[in-house]
Structure formats: C-alpha cells, structure tokens
Image (cartoon, rainbow, N blue to C red; front, top):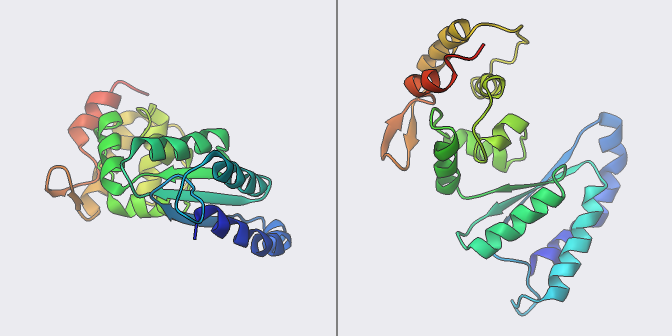
Length: 206
C-alpha cells in the first residue's frame, strides 16, 4: 500500500489524540521507513500522487506531531525529495538517512565525534535537538559542541559558562567512562570523541 494511504489512515487516529496531547503538552512521533518517492497503487510515481501525499502531510504540520522519515536508499532523487520536505516543514518533518551515510556526513562536518549507532536510533525515534540535527549538516559552534556532548553523555544538569580546559576535563572523563562503539568506516571500535581533534577545533574557544 502506498505511503500516503498509510498517512491518510493515521489522520483520524491522530485527531483523536489531539486533546490529550494538548493537555499533557506532548508531541506525537511517527516514524516512517521508505525507499521511494510516493507512488500510486501500481507502484508508479506521478505528480498527482505526490500532490496527494503533500496535502495529507500538510494536515500534520498544524498538529503537535513529528514525522521522521527513515530513508532506506541512496538514490539521490528520493533522498532530496524528503530533505526538501524537511526544509519546508522544519518543525514537523525530520529525515534520517541510513546509519553509514549519516556517520559519513557527521565525520565530514564534525570529525571529532563518532556518530554512534545509539545516537542514530534516538534520532530515528524522533528525539530531536538542534545540536544533534546539525551534526550531519555543518560544523558545530563551540557551545553547540558542548551541548551535544552533554546530551550524548547524559549530563543534563544546567551549567554556567566554563572554560574549555574545565569542559575538556569533564568530556575526557565522560568519554573514558562510556563504552566504545563500532565505527563502520574504520572497521574497528572507537570512543565517542577524538579528544585531539576536539582540541584542534575548539581549544581556542571560550
């Protein structure tokens, strides 16, 4: 069954949840796995089907709902289609590429961090923080890097502005205490953070 039919089927169910979502100040997360642009019942791509899909999606934009599209293909046309939707509906739509591609993009923009699979799973489940979403898109600013590491290492206590040397000491301890992770590109286990690369990029920051 085409993806937009499934999305249409969810509309009344989500509408029924809106009062409780509003009362509890919560968001609903829908995770959708796909490997193609929306198609009709015959598996054919056409403008009418895509338009139906976009119109259905627009209903969710008005609600406290996050839709995570797990794109299970490397086909550029498909990836760009869903990324365009994410740009147009940034508050509602997230796109998560397959793990290895996301890992590669994070390494390109933020080489000090290994994009561990647990973090990828969190994003697939709709756990969204701006610092985490930016990892695969651009280099993080110093305070964003601090925030990202505090999220990753579950250091949630508020903290005043601190020096890099103070932060580095904490980060090194968190990194040492955390389990190592498999890096699919290097084909070996690595820690979350490469402290030397972290120093190179942020040591001069306050």
